[in-house]
Amino acid sequence: MIVRELADKLGLEAVAGKQGMEKKITGGYSGDLLSDVMGKAPEGCIWLTVQGHQNVIAIAVLKEMAAIVLTGDHEPDEDTIEKANQENIPLLLYPESAFVLAGRIYESGIGKTG
Image 1 (cartoon, helix red, strand yellow):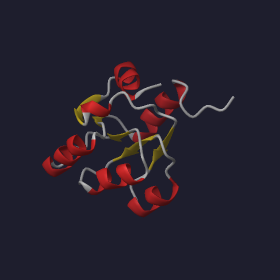
Image 2: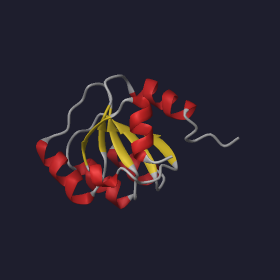
Image 3: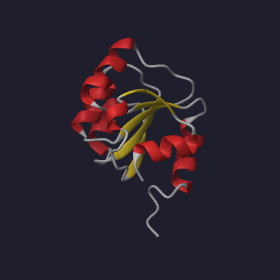
Image 4: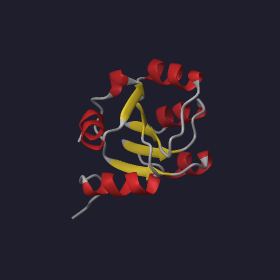
């Protein structure tokens, strides 16, 4: 599934990086500790976090992520939006918790192995 399909299906609001909406999502990761995400998030994942500063974009580029979703009504900084647009990293918003969104993403088929 590509980022645009998932965003449409789950009502995720794209606020930046819209040129990257055709990236394929191959998995997911949820976390707010940046060092943990850098060490463990898989390539091609969609990352659920509450961190809205521009360091998340650098990590997404480093890990070759498909997209970032800020959960729980958190908003990105203006610098983050600008950086996401420069790097073509889709930056999406979701009003409910990461727990709820992770369940919905899993139900959509992303991350299921069987």
